[in-house]
Image (cartoon, rainbow, N blue to C red; front, side):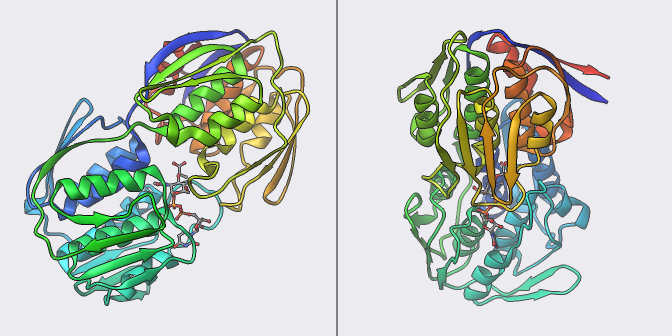
Length: 418
Ligand code: EPZ
């Protein structure tokens, strides 16, 4: 079994360019089904979820090539309308293929998606949006959709990222005008809109709560560069806040991290941000201050994906921090692993109380899910001694060579066979 050995307890110093965003490249790969010619994507991260998405595109008849961080997709030969259960179970993002597949083929046959165990991951809003665009949706032994999407007024009860993306893609591939109200405002939605418009689509409003799509336009191929991954950046900043030292991260827009940077500033870190980089300094000789409350929320609120890594950094802060996870029912599975390292954290439902301790110590720890794995790596960077981190199949879904990133920042981390 592969594990990452991390020797923590000392300050780090380094800089790196953050790789492309998992939660942007995945919907954009699904959107390639709508392109009228070859698409070239640059700044694509090497992640197992990306590999899974490429396998789905090939299964559907697309030609796909990957060379370094460039992916080339030619969807002109696409002919399939069904995605296997195994492929659907490989990640949550497999559901994002529903909208473009239905719009392109006039039918789509999928099963329920997989992904991190964060509690129930319903797709009712995705299916309701597709019904609003006039398509039939049957749920028996899987999901079976038929019809050509026509314009509709979609009201999302929750600003769901995935449902917003599915609705956008279905509407771009359909006809008529579609409005999506209470749309998610995450930066990855902007990236998707910008990609679609590069192909000749007419999408407006991403970043606001109302997105408008003018369907019926024949799309071309095109070239697009994926935005930097703000959650990977938040994880690395958490590692520096935990260990002490100085790191500079390029390739990510600090505005996408504003709420996370604010927490680290309140905790006593020095944070500097320019358009092209973010820098964090923390004096290891001075304990972090706890932050009264961290409440996750849809963007531009505090990102749920950064909750675990930031909690790990605050596990040794002076005082208590209350964390309220409003987005998912079960997103504290990293807590028991942090407790193995000496953390003093109590959870009750969606609330966690983090009582800062003087120091964490190294331990054998296992990633329970993707961002929990990032949190444990951040904690290990600040912990005295050696930690052995397993569960890398979770981590490799969203971090491209996490151990290499930690090394580049001056940390002592190495992947080995255990
Ligand atoms: C996306 O997941 C991200 N994944 C998640 O990141 C992220 O945590 C989440 O958005 C919230 O920001 C990708 O983009 C691939 P949602 P998604 O639909 O789209 C409920 C990571 O670590 N809901 O915005 O699945 C849902 O249960 C991953 O990179 C419904 O009730 O999240 C949740 O409580 C983890 N019905 C809330 O909405 C639906 O039909 C937000 O979920 C859909 C969602």
